[in-house]
Amino acid sequence: MLSKQWIKHKAHEVVYKAGTNNPILICERNHIPVCHQNLGRAILGHYTNVNRIPLITLSAQNDEFEDNYACAHELGHHYCQHGNNTEWLSRNNLRFNTFGSEYEANKFMVDMMLDGINAHDFETKEQLMKYCHIPAWAERYIDWDLLIE
Image 1 (cartoon, one colour):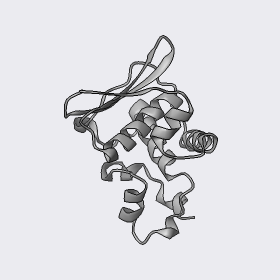
Image 2: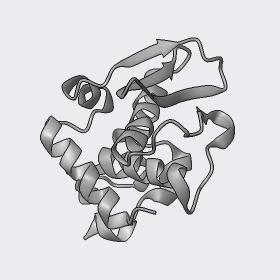
Image 3: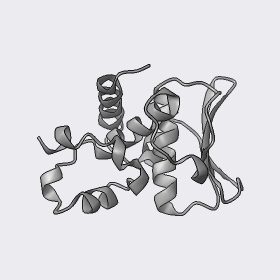
Image 4: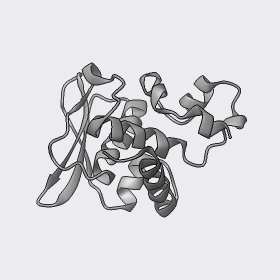
């Protein structure tokens, strides 16, 4: 299992190299194709490799907010090198994981979206999360003590 520190460092490295923490732009700047498919309302996204080429598939039924965090989660699978055997990110599995590839992808998502953010610029945690496109279910992945320091 990857450490929290490794995931945070990797997320920072990805944001720094891309010059943004926007997951769609990160994909574009790193030549990671993102496609939209009709995956139904339950599925948000999926990561796979096709002939060693990474591919992120997002649901055509996602709104922009869902696309942002789903893409960031799938980038987590890519940069944490999880391969092809990851779960589909669905509305039914948005729960707190304490270990494994889903934990790592969610932790990467949150760390990437918070990179460079000063928590003191926001009056509430909810404002910060909304600004950074972090869904409420992912709040438990935020290390608030480190973010506020």
